Image 1 (cartoon, helix red, strand yellow):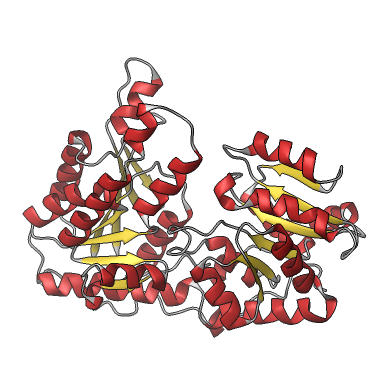
Image 2: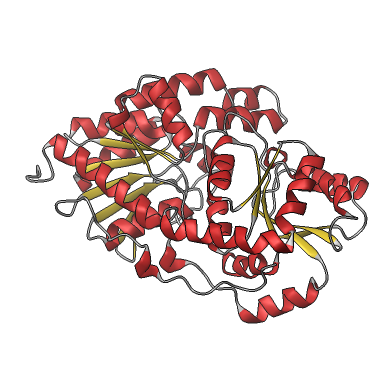
Amino acid sequence: MPTGSPEPIAVERAQAAPGAGTARPLRVLKVFFSGYPWEVRAEKICRSLMGAGHAVTLLCRNDRLQPRREDLGGLQVMRIHPLRIGPRALNALWNSPVPFSPVWAAHITHAVAEARPDVVLVREIPLAVPSALAAHSFGAPVVLDMAENYPAAIAEWGRWERGGWGRRLRRNVAAARLLERLSVAVADHVLVVAQEQADRLTGMGLPAGRVSLVGNTPELDRLQEAPAALLDDLQRRFRGRTVLLYVGELHLHRGLDTAICAIRHLRDALPDPLLLLLGTGLHQETLRRIAASEARAGAVHFEGWVEPSSVAAYVAACQVALVPHRVSEHTNTTLPNKLFDFMAQGRPVVVSDAAPMARIVAAEACGTVFRSGDAASLAEAVRRAADPEQAGGMGARGREAVLREYHWGCDFQRLCGALAAVARAQGRAGGRAQ
């Protein structure tokens, strides 16, 4: 079975040419609901657009009392004017990207007036309507980046959270679905990360020509090699064990309770199985209690948060990579970037039967699929993925699929094409209003 890091990827084989599909550089205003830095998709989009010659301004929230203006390697960052009086919680509320927030509406309007963008690219539906109102008032189109099925995510998060009226207000699914319909209607174009989400939106009446697939895929030229010293240490630490690796938030909706319960089914099937959990999260203590009652001592290890630069070593040291997310409307319409990260590093993947993940893993024969919530099914999927006669081929096929198709070069081409198309349709790419 595979050990260590795969050979470095030859980027020129698959990386798409930056800027493909754009006639000339654009001015792009990205409206981002969270703080910056750091977020993988936001950073990837901004960096790639700038690398292709486009001018990018980013408007984001300011919970941490950061500078209102900052130049980050050419990226012009504008942040919400913070409240510097009262408790930090008050500033967090002030910055909250709730739908129709007058704070955000004013800042978005000011940013559009100053940046005079050819395109406004807004992340998620809470800020889509004020972004569209501001952009359209200045004659600019709006592209809505729906990195997930937001109403379904609201429903899934609310299912596992505790709280009273405050939680019910924040997790109002009916209001989120209404806002989604309004946001899609006012957007000139919509980006999604999974074909299933595109199909859902066209089923709601969105014309197919107004939606593009821009996935959460890795940048081939930025894939990190496993730090040699750390990899050697991990391989000594886990010698003789079959390591099942999970990387991400420790939440119950990620199916980690099922993964923990699956360990007891693997005692006689694999050499000393170990479930290694990287990350922290809301349900960490709950999962520790489940592990204490369902798995023998030492069979589940909570590694905690690790530096992003170290994750590659953990992936290289494992035999099987897990994405055990529970099936829901949310997971049936989105794709986690970790799936492609694991595939890129040549590891067989075990995924739940959430539709997008199951489709890709089955099509590429790069891992196995189990029934969501079924510990015995997960254990059998792990056993097959860890089989020395199968694991190497699965890992190699997953890696080849990333080189061929599931990488940011392909998705960036589609992003550029969508931005250029809406800019041309608005008549601004050739002659900009000043």
